Length: 252
Image (cartoon, rainbow, N blue to C red; front, side, top):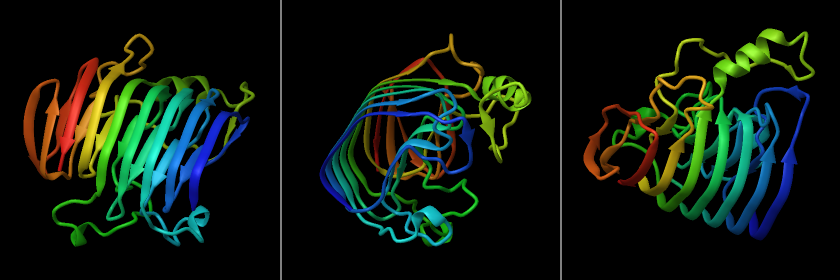
């Protein structure tokens, strides 16, 4: 639990990377905080750089023992840079509220997802049973992203690090499984809520998979999505969108 907190001026660096190495990870009952001026050097972090997980108090994860599911509210996250991280941002809400959170000025090379709101559906140990939520998950209110620049690094990471571990100072233990073919999507939205994204940019000059899809919307029900002025309603289907610059509104 945390209240009225400031986390700033942190650089993450490591020469030995393993699974589940988050950067700054907030669980339930965190309110009125500022996280700013965060840097992750090449390879770091090997999981989410910034994670807000309101529904992850599960015994499956050793690092979650003793935490509580609960609301996360009233946060500012700004000025985050990562050269080649696993994922810069995760929002995990099943039932608990995540509200009044602003992310701004984020720049990251990404090996997995950029903005990850998948509800941990694709992890080895899911935090909820899909059949218990036939109309989807999520309780997010007034979530704002401003000035987010992202590019893919997974192919470069494999060729420059994983395939050359004997020659590199950066050692990776139990690396995430990587596919050489282009990933079908980059940012993933599978959690209902009220989300506004302003100026989400893909840097294709740095992107190692410029042909892969940039946005994925799935498992959203009774949810209205507006992407660059085009509005559609989601009822559980999967929709992919590609492009270089986006303004997005999700209401569900």
